[in-house]
Image 1 (cartoon, helix red, strand yellow):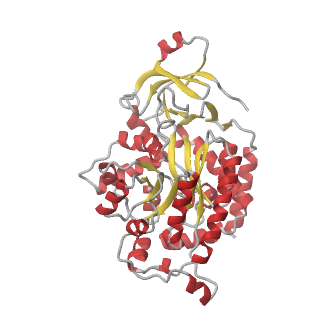
Image 2: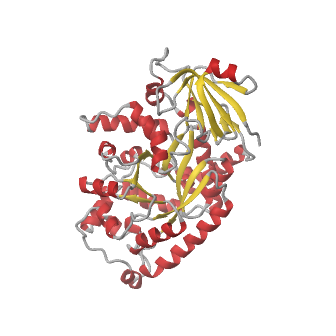
Image 3: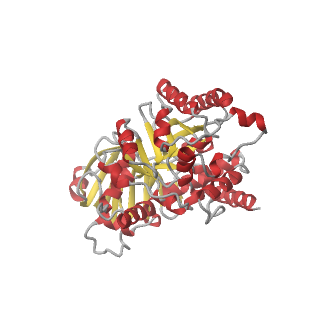
Length: 459
């Protein structure tokens, strides 16, 4: 494998996110970290011995941080389509159950390829099999991999949590600790006996694990928790009357999903990420802030499945740590952070007219905002000396904003994944435009396997 240890990255524009863009700038990378940022001519004269990569009229910037995804479902894109959330969820799970672990690994590899070629250097992924954990290790992505755990029957809670803890330990041993963090994720509220949440948080505190969970994502979940209604109240029940008596026989709680989760200590550990938070009220937001819960906003998925719109502007006003997530490729069809930024910005502008989100805000959420949400902002998310060299180069030479006035708006409103020239994670090149990959994986074989898997799922 090829590693760059000492390198100057040059481009017409550098976007360090935390300050103003630098025209004709350079970033010096050594031993996986950023050493210095400055003007290209001065940096070249100061470090004449360094290897130089010149990306011309491009933006060099921190890699995107995708705060929520399901890499193993990449091959499901387009198979369950044009249906609302509850129907999509049932069909998606049926298709996913047809996939072997090897299928899930190959699917996750395809997802990793799309992430890296689209400028994503860090992902927060949910898995119950560990296939995506193996894939991110093999592909060189920085990752937080959450082991999903849950059971609706109280009698099964201890055994499923014990199995999850064993997986967490083995995944930790098998992962590159410099790049991959292992966490734990209780399944959705409707899929868990409520004791799961308190037990998961106790385990997280004991083992030092980050926690993530889907919360308040859909109208169906809101009505299920508050009113005891919708198909979610009977989905997944099987095994006759015995299984029914061991499940929480759901009665209307009269509270929001966030309030329900709070009642079962779901936010009691130090590092909790709540995904979606679409159906929340002002008191919910206050409580999320009070417990220092971060939020992954997935606007595109929520719009695709008719789930609603998270009040992003209220999260920001409350000072909550917020990042963006592309969510399941089975819903959104692509892991595209450019589309996520742009669509999120436009939808919120059109709905919340008094809170006009800027392109700079969206770029911040896609980079340092996501790093804050994952509590990784001391290491990644911005171009600063001492931070890890998770860096991308975005080609702006074909931008319709040429000659460029503001490279930030050019990236957010006009660029696309196809414009990513170069992706580096921890100072190691992982991808260059034109299908250049820096790993030992046969990418053509991965693509062939993905086609085979999709054929099986479509039958």
